[in-house]
Image 1 (tube, rainbow, N blue to C red):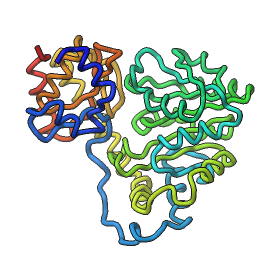
Image 2: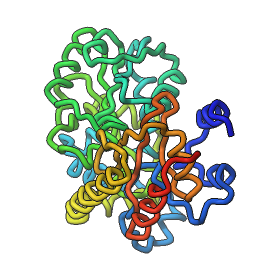
Image 3: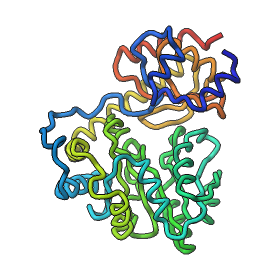
Image 4: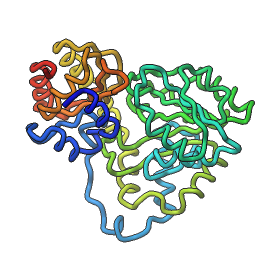
Length: 349
């Protein structure tokens, strides 16, 4: 297939979200596919058996309160009253945009390294009726009504210091604006850099994603952390049963399990170091990432992407950054072996 045709197809093809599309694209690839495109923990939190009531009964307010309590403790929020539970962070982005008083213009921090990683953010903001600009630097966000920052960044893992974001939030607040920080990957970053504990200091909302770190993205669970008055408005917009009974049960158990979280951070960091070694031995240059994914410079990324796909290994490519690929972590030893063997084949002809 010609490069232009593949580039067009990739605009709508995210192999980490659509394995069926990957099978159509690479029909002769060995199965099962190894999904290194989605960048989530490949070893999920161990699920326990759920009671039938989790499926048959509407969850009561006590279940939501308990989840908010453990989420506040895990994410370092001031209190459970600051936490809003939702079916994923994507819907919260739309809600925050809709509730931002008088907001007309949103600005998204998109440095050159971000590639196409802001597509879902942009779609949500535009759908909320806001005009939108993509800004290369933090200072350019201060004139917006709603400023969005992804921290740590995806895909390069760049982490903006907390104090710089607080300065930006103060500038926005003086103009009646708001800072929205997507901390989807903060679980594997420097935890002290979260803005969750600072949401009473300025107009700040923080989004946290449950599924990436816990390897349970299909559960659909996310959180917003903000001042209690704004959090109350978010809850009202979402309605009384925004999170399912199974998600409440699993989320509460997982977020309360501090020992699992500590061990998982250590395991992911080790796996990321090993992945760096595999990529560099194949001649790729690792230029950033987090403990959940690595960003590598590889010359002609299209040819590498095709070769890996033919070998049943799915990675993320950025059509506007033709030299870069993002690799998630293999789940186990066979996964590392298959990735190593696929890389040894070299880029496709």
